[in-house]
Length: 594
View 1 (tube, rainbow, N blue to C red):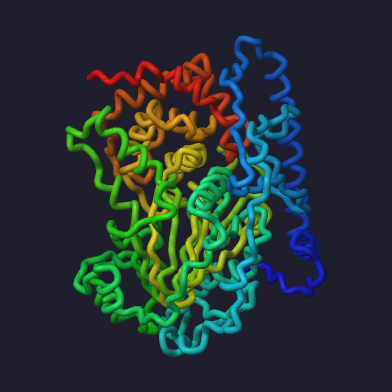
View 2 (view 1 turned 180 degrees about the vertical axis):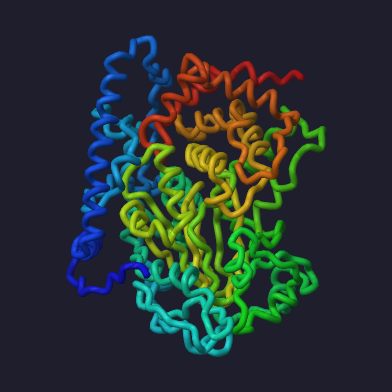
């Protein structure tokens, strides 16, 4: 069972509360001689390993010749014009020192070196806090905090346990009874108890951006979301209306979304997941799923329910650069003739989720490095977003994510490595989460959610590292594999020479796109079926040529580009690129002759 942080912390600010929780947890661990000795041994081993790595790194730096050193990019700095009416920007502050941190063995020596990280060009865009106004019309904690009454003994077993979350809400725990025993107790219920102890995300959060839909113009809303995502911060937008009185039944789904009750779907069943975590699926129809939605003996959900006609709200549609620029604006330069375009390029753009009460999705990140958005149509979600306590290298980040592959065994190290916030999503709320965001979701009451995936030029550095991790450990860390990403990235690359001169591009995000296009075979997800091959299409040759021209312009070669790209903060999108310089580099690709 996870540590229960139930202490009187009133009067302390959030940082002081977190520090106090860590101190109490560590003190309890040190009271147990076996745990104390294990912690001391880990610390001694970490210090020895750190000294060894620093010695090797120092030797490497002293022996490295000037010719071997990575040449800095040759792009010119450009400070965009700002006006008093420009969108309030996102705050990107350095986390305060922690009393408990990840083992030093997971921190890349480069990140501990005295070399200063590159600074952002646009100081206003990169450092100013967002205009996040507390939402008094859609509070996080309404008077009714009870999500047990009307569910217990009706939609879930009477034997279900209950839990109180950090924001005061009371919910049931996952429960499927078999021979008088709750078979969810050691996995799903334990996970929900752990999640319930995590702090609630508030408008003052430095890691999650809270916005009110009615307080921003369309342009401000789009720019605020885009900037937050490029800096690895989820965004919650409140004020979308309420459907709390809606009955979740076949009539509601058919009249509002055109979903037929006879539609065939793949159902995820918790009882089957307990038996085999890798294969919780069963076949059924929408009507069969709804017939069991109030069956206390079952907990089920439907993921990725196709909903191609429903997507981003109108005021946010331009965030999907993969569609807006990658597909809409490249078909003349590169016509689609081969028929090799995978349908996932379009079917993953919008979908729906349908859940019974009590379903929990364990920590994972979404496939193909996509940005994910969800809108609560009816119901409630506790969406838990995780963030490493320290800045990690890509290999260290992969190791840190692998801790979630065995939660029960690695729980103590997870607490030391990761911090998290619970975003409470109510009817009408919209959530955007960055590419590669590790998250868990609990559904305490039956819910229907619409959402989708997209790619954005400002977040492609996060997409790249997410796909890098998928190429090695996808079978442990992501939900399911898709086949659309590469073709969309190639189209986004082809769109670069014709982007508007006012379009903002960040250096590391752009190089991340180029690396994914040039080294496309290295990003094949490890959970693809055996024998899977990446097939070239009519966009491949042109995209590779443009990506190669960009990397050659800013670096000597691809190896030097990779070395520079993979050093420093992996969540940093980099400096703004001069559009004039990029246009000069890509002029050969702007010819109007075929």
